[in-house]
Image 1: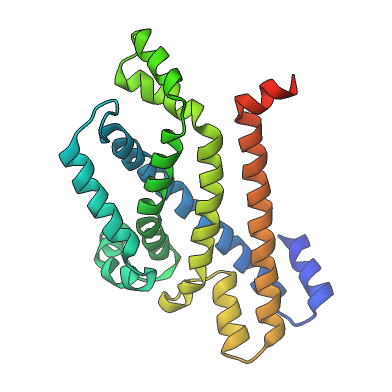
Image 2 (image 1 turned 180 degrees about the vertical axis):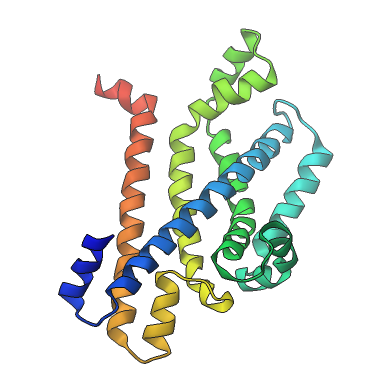
Length: 234
């Protein structure tokens, strides 16, 4: 952290080096934790959506329809409105409606429906022949999900994680509304409100760099877990 502070101080010389370092850490921390929570719950809902679909492994039209409607409703609500509506939930979970902990709750709630639909889509990409072969070998639904579907869909799921990370990162500037931190908040508070274009541009560039780094990381992980790609390289 000290080296990073010295880097910003040397190249920017505006006395905000420590603020930039803290903002980077808060942005990455908020985004990663929000993505992780959203993927944990979104994975469960995505599996249920996939499994209860007509002709799927444990088809249930009522559950699929009700869950689909609820997810679509949450997906259609603008984030700023969802942030206001879910403040009681944040208060219940983290004992506050303000700051980074509360914002992580808001981010997670907003991202879970989005992730659920991506997980459902990724599972639908699994070859039906693989599923039929696993069922013929006597796999139960639990084994089919965790030993066949999710491993086979892993490259697509990692690609979806990169998309979710980028989407959640795009919401982080909203932290300024509830006293949170991060690069987006810094760009608005020091850049826009104080008419300092340099701070706004630097913060935006840093956000772009963070997106590129994590996008490349998820892409590499996706390629490493893609059996088809590995087989073609042999």
